Length: 438
Image (cartoon, rainbow, N blue to C red; front, side, top):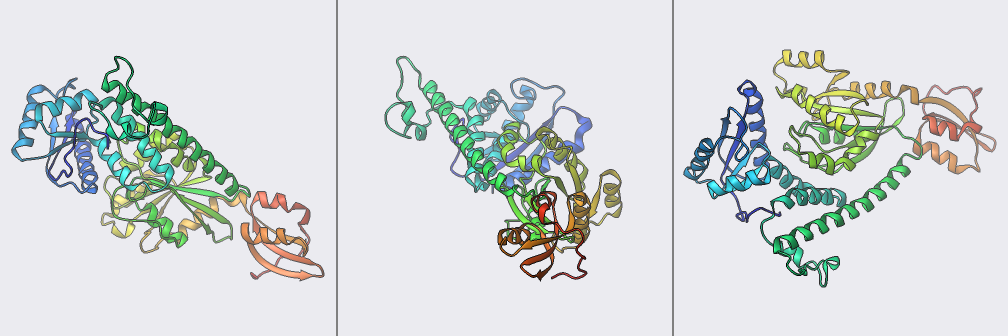
């Protein structure tokens, strides 16, 4: 990572700090500090202590006052921490000020999340998105030469070299190199997104309906996708277990195919640059016919998590989508009043356990209801010479019955509107409907 100062190769003892400016938000502040603990644990850093610090007003240099800042720095030294992690977002000058009074590495919530994302990204697009976000975060924090950029290639800057112009300071060279790298990443991302757009057009050629799974991180989104599709997407009890979108095809009870996409999870106070960086990945939610909004019903903060996700969906322009609110992990809910409150306050809910499979039949029924206007059962009389059309029905629709009449294939199928339009010349409305599937 590109740091303000050299980090130790291994940080093992962290002091976690949240500076609160409103005592009336005590419960929220405590919840955010607990979430920061989970984030830091995800990085494998040991936590010595957590501190919730109250300040009457926000100060420019340390957020809190100088006296309180001195106390925090002294305490961090006393318990022998090698890193102070702030839940508050620190401006570059504030990060430098804290490192100056503590002589300890200082990072903030955004840098923690960026580190997690960097370790979890798998696809080329996600890797590029994370690198772009990290470079943009690091640029205003640069203090020293970035040697690895200096060695990218020979010659001038266009080839990756770092030749210095007359009177140009090293920090200016470093920043220029960083901006060049940012521009190259943006160009690479544009190419990758263009390729993904082409793949999406192929996928949408026959307008197979599409549902996107969204929700707070660790709500069980990937586990749900695995359960309903029989796939093996990584699913673990940790924050941001998966970052890359994964799409699987399933079949609903009425025979209609459905594409289901798992997306990256959200957290409160998700850095704006990460929302921007992942818009291409999250646009699956924007383009989907409807959303599965998955909540961990066993978590007391479930309503807060719901609001966080809705807020981010608004930023993406996807908050007006049809939505099924999936109350997951109901097998872990001990407080029935809490579950009743979720039903009362949230729209279109269904209870499930993605681990045990309980309630998945109800979830599929809700999907069918949402897509009801898209499906119709038709009988087609197709010449056997048109094998491509017969194959189309088998791959893009639900074939209910097949019969043969002379040189024709009589097929009854549940089809979407696009397939129905493609095969309208072969539709035989007077053909009797079969009562059993073939």
